[in-house]
Length: 61
Image 1 (cartoon, rainbow, N blue to C red):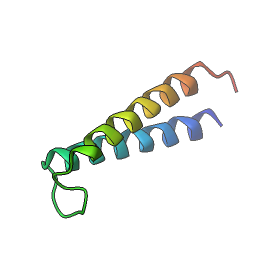
Image 2: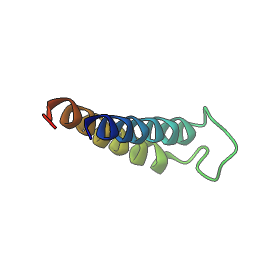
Image 3: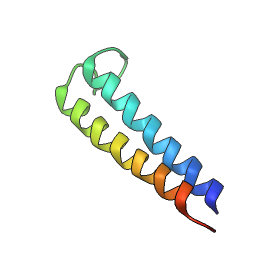
Image 4: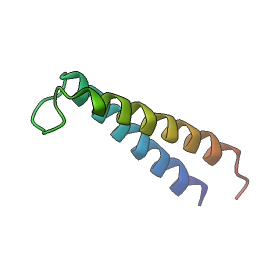
């Protein structure tokens, strides 16, 4: 169960990073490219992923 939480948190963190990079215009090919709102959405998602990683590492199960 701990591994599943860890992997899900990594996926959330990765999606947040991707969305932030698309918002900055560094990754193209999407409706999100160049829109600053996706930078903020990505940063919040990355924060959720980091919290999830900490939670996955602290859980005992």
